[in-house]
Image 1 (cartoon, rainbow, N blue to C red):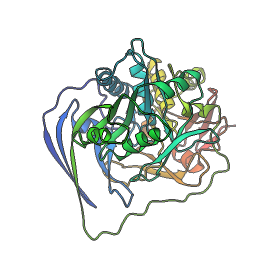
Image 2 (cartoon, rainbow, N blue to C red; image 1 turned 90 degrees about the vertical axis):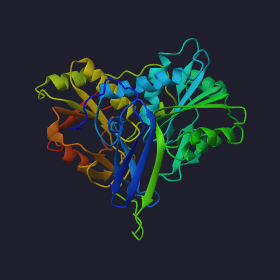
Image 3 (cartoon, one colour; image 1 turned 135 degrees about the vertical axis):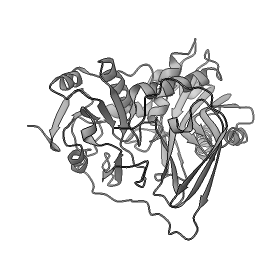
Image 4 (tube, one colour; image 1 turned 45 degrees about the vertical axis):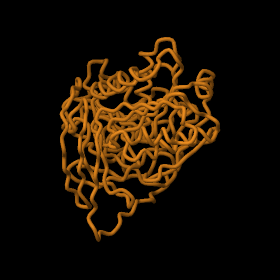
Length: 411
């Protein structure tokens, strides 16, 4: 289980400098301001990527390190409170989050922010790497990423169609800001289809640009009359000094292709937008947890982009009185070390034949493990991952529970 203690609140921290010597270079972080201590939010790791050899690993995001449902909710509320002080909650707001890392974070900010809206409408539209056969509104690239392409789908719900077309406030959510290129690329993609905004609010857990990202967005074509604000839990600067002479890292690109897509079209409709509250069927989960499961913490695992639903399930499990945590599998290739102590590599959930990873999950640490999938079958779950988890359960979109023993489904 994660060594993190649950977070209950944040408070102002003093400016400070931190130095992290890694095998491929040295990272220096200068903290200018923040509402959480650095160790409460991130740890450093090494990315298996020739373009960027380091990775800020969030301890509160639920992507590489399990996080308690309560701690993640504290972070969402803190971010939403900051945003509500920057925007007009009486006007319509479109929230967007980046795949795959910030897909759930964006949905969570939307969820916490919608409770703070006064008379304005609000909706959420993520980017996705998996548009399927849905209509793509626009697309862009994330140059430093292990997977560069992002698609933004045409909203399918009537209220979201209106927000996407008319809302004058855009809230962009990502886990971190370094150069601002990812924000800029998305805003430029929206501008290419005629969408500009009166106010853009950039929301991150950590902003390492010391405000430069706000300036970069303001200087984009079409943003001359746009007010740009930002909200982050830590703001500062980073300086990476690579070690000379090392061979470049190679990104793993191939894995066995699973037989099915592992995703249901109706279940995947959230990629075309979310509005209102997300609640999931819990009766079968409750029965599974009450049927002789050891008394201990419950871990809910999301699959790839399907992470917001895993967090919400963890919250609903916590409402049953259980200690509930969550995280998701990822395509982010991170090297093992002090931050990533356990790593399982397996084939992706979407039938593409690329590697995915599960980090920092020791099954014996958990009283129960539940994995959330986007299909009524289990085609998108590699037997390698099942073998690692051993005794666990899969919940399908309908709420059905499929139990596994020693990595195989029970008869």
